[in-house]
Image (cartoon, rainbow, N blue to C red; front, side, top):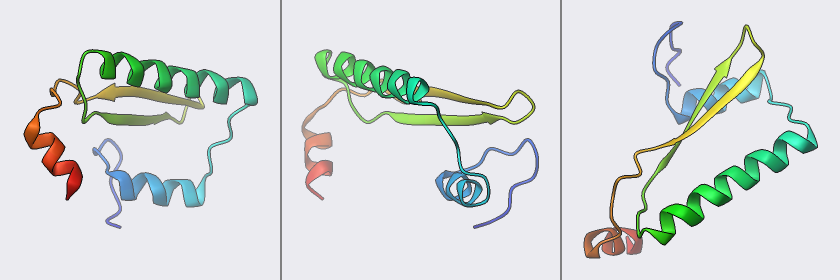
Length: 87
């Protein structure tokens, strides 16, 4: 994993490496809210026949907060995405 400099956009591998050094600790309440939020977002996206989104994860180190957002979701579930799923 290439070490990123402060302010760089990082990838999944960087986040995984970060978690190895500094695991995220969430309270049960925070876990419930996070799980419900992702569930509700995916139900909504499914209801409008959209898929292929990404979960953007950020860590506000000074504030000690985890920041999340669903991005890249403006993609209809068409035949090409169905075929992509099969491979």
